[in-house]
Amino acid sequence: MAIDIRREREAGSHAGPASRGESAEEAGKLLGQWAMVTGAGRGIGAEIASYFARAGASLVLTELPAQMGLAEGVAERLKSEHGIDALCVPLDLRDLEQIEQCVRSVEAIASMDYLINNAGVNLLSPALNLTQEDWDFVVDINLKGTFFLTREVAKTMVRKKRGSIIMIASQHGVVGNENRAPYCASKAGLIHLSRALAIEWAKYGIRVNAISPTFVITDANEQFINDHQFQRANLPRIPLRKFAVPEDIAKSVLFLATDSAGMITGHNLVVDGGWTVI
Ligand SMILES: NC(=O)c1ccc[n+]([C@@H]2O[C@H](COP(=O)([O-])OP(=O)(O)OC[C@H]3O[C@@H](n4cnc5c(N)ncnc54)[C@H](O)[C@@H]3O)[C@@H](O)[C@H]2O)c1
Image 1 (cartoon, protein in one colour):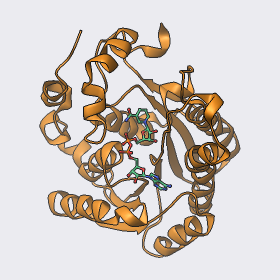
Image 2 (cartoon, protein in one colour; image 1 turned 90 degrees about the vertical axis):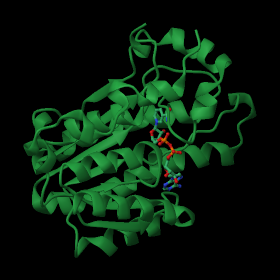
Image 3 (cartoon, protein in one colour; image 1 turned 120 degrees about the vertical axis):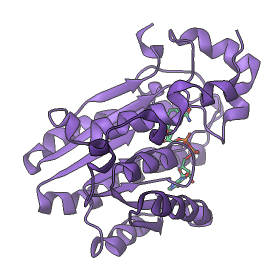
Image 4 (cartoon, helix red, strand yellow; image 1 turned 180 degrees about the horizontal axis):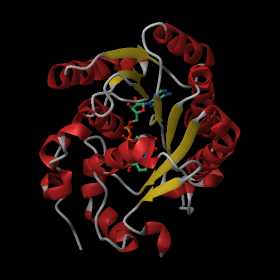
């Protein structure tokens, strides 16, 4: 069964937050708070940033140095649409010094209430062909860099005795799949890292949770997901028979990050249309 991705994205739950009928309270409920979103120049990260901006949060958007124009475009749009503050900071998660500089460069202005670890990469290859560089590329960004950024941001949260951290993991961190061994391993690592940090940092009032999406249709991968062979192979594995859109993930992040989920920590919220329950 083939689906029309464009129509999927335009339908019902795929409209933007302003058309979703949220109450005025929801629209402004994060006024005066700061959220850092990594890899926010496009895709799921840009959508998460939009949802936090609509809720009134001010933003620190990080992006790869070569992609800063994308983050700046998102920041300008959100500032003019929602009247929030938005700072853009270059960050390559493979560079541990840059991680520290990134956090230090904003801490005088912005004391982070939320950290959304969205930036991540995948690399499709049979495990037998993987090089050390391939492995390090994926694991250094998805797991190692994400941990060190989280630790740096958490230092401020510890001082405030309050904070909420979300890891964007994947269904492939819950169940395996072929040709993506470092991705599966790194995302499973993120889910378990969330649990470990949730236990360790609960005493500081910091909650740590993960969100694990199924395939999400973004501008960058729309063509790939629109491929009939891809759909034939993957849609039957999703009981709801649809792929996710960035709004599905952003809504879940906003719920899990904020006080609506104030009693939830160490959880992995699977947003997969049922992929992992088959
Ligand atoms: N799209 C999907 O189907 C899907 C499914 C499950 C999970 N995810 C996860 O959701 C997150 C966002 O995915 P997306 O589809 O929007 O991807 P994307 O490639 O569109 O966005 C990823 C972002 O991370 C940034 N980035 C890449 N390398 C980086 C590095 N070294 N340091 C800092 N930032 C870096 C990119 O510039 C980009 O802005 C990722 O963690 C991904 O693994 C995506």
